[in-house]
Image (cartoon, rainbow, N blue to C red; front, side, top):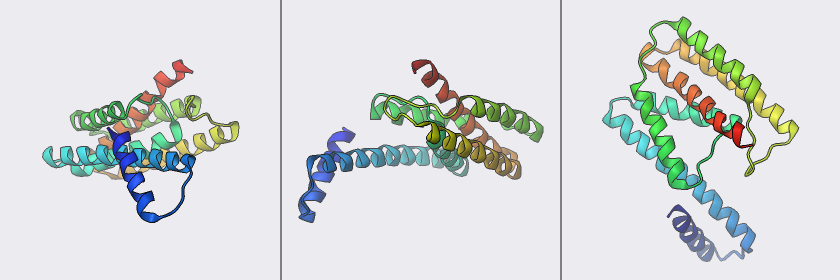
Length: 183
């Protein structure tokens, strides 16, 4: 469905623009549109959930942290757009059901475990997007830096919000596990 919509949009845009594009360029444009629509649909569904559950701020915190870390850590990828959207939405919605962590030392312990996990495991390369040694080193550094910044921000947030970035980091780490075994 997303592929059909993307193909339709890109074909319309290229025909209106009067620019000659070869088949390879059009495939790249279609893929880019698929990625955009996949992300857009997920964010819209989660935003609606955030509004309905009165957790919009926390939901957007979860989205920001999850997306940011996921970019550098890699991990499991669904085989279809629908699978990706559904799994991302379910993870995002589940953040609203995680109990509030009232004690900051629990956050510290959680982030130390996650930091150790990221240092040992990340980034996880995939067959679709293999990484060079240099890219792995760069992504690992960014993931560790981002996690440290996320931890500091979480410490500054009130307890009812600090759980969202912490849980997003946990989700990102958990998605690396299946990808490790598939390699």
